Length: 156
Image 1 (tube, rainbow, N blue to C red):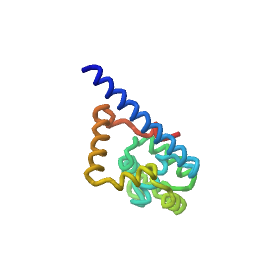
Image 2: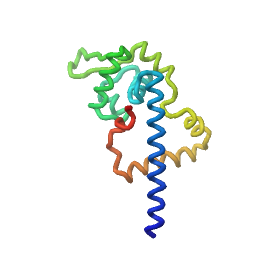
Image 3: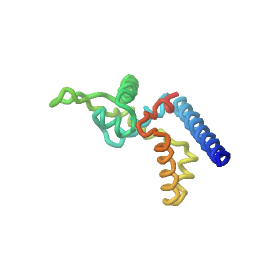
Image 4: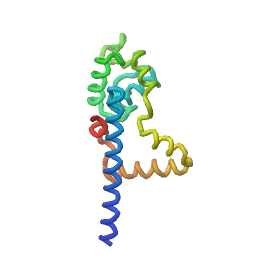
């Protein structure tokens, strides 16, 4: 039995490493084409959909820690792709709002997943999409990785 388990362990590890490498390569491609990292594009995309959010809502929406999002927002604000707006009623609340330049990039940016993956995944039946999604979420659970900030693997 240990031989069989070892075989599966190695196959899972190899598959995960290939996925991580593929995501890294695509993230670097996006960075070279747009001058933005995947998490930065995630922020712009989220703000393009919801127009403005407080920082905590943005962090929750894109599933990154608040401290990571602050750094991302700093860099995007420096590039004039979004702006912070302090609430008039509660000075502790800061909204983040996408600028027109940020919206232009968000609209032009390709899928944050590789295009061929996105197309192939979309061509699967809804049941197959659900099975893959559930299996990946289960891997996250098995690795006790639900609370891990995904950004370190997404920022080149």
